[in-house]
Length: 369
Image (cartoon, rainbow, N blue to C red; front, top):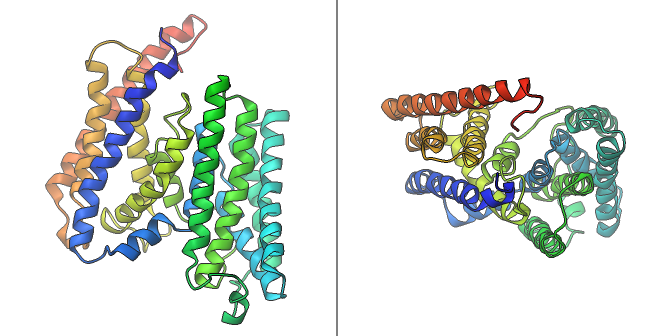
């Protein structure tokens, strides 16, 4: 069997093609409706929520999950608001926010690398602790800053400078680290996951700081999960499927653009903004992950039939994207039904093939990943 890294040129092409086709279907109608203007596009690509999405993507790239990104984001905003409101220097605020994020990341790294605990359990526990801490620091209320407090920060007339600098710095850093690992032929073991955990904590906290500078207020504390576009963007960029082969830099470069696509989907495809949970973003996350996951595994088998089912699932996702409309009354019911049907057929057969191949492998003492 070929090494898994040899699968990644076609797997990467699959992820990129799916993202490009989604953009081709979602962006033009959004633009034609007057919703999309250049400043709006830039604000989506450079949203503060892109920073925790980058952190989550890095953790997922190394086989983990960070369920604390939303809580650390809120905590970073709360700490920033408290310190800025008390007259702290911007550099001191920045250092404190980084310290909070890195502290969470170190706890996650120790729990997963030293104690060998699952990442979801460690990050869920710290998220619960972070929710309690955030409620204590904020009094359970949204904190706001005056314009005088914000003017102490340079370039606050356009907070995109800060967010953009952090996003670009992250991409450049990951690109350099990936290049060094490729030259040294380094693997992606527990050390890489630990580094990703620390980076995720720092990026999430910085995202909270950027949010405060953007809105002048903190998010409402006490929520375990906030903006689900964070998860959808990470999955759309291939963070959960491109697990080997040094694709971290590519995934990070895609995340800002997939975040914009997740925003359009959230607004125009099965919009559920008034619901307690954005179910259309949950659907996007699942419907994007399954064809990526199935295609990577199909590459391990010869022939084109195995690749047919994830391709059908991807076509189902694209058909749903083609049904996007600004109002529910304009929904394209035939394309919606076709998309759901294609996705269910392709993902169902792919899941059955995976399960069928695992059964004899388990009896033999091994299993297919």
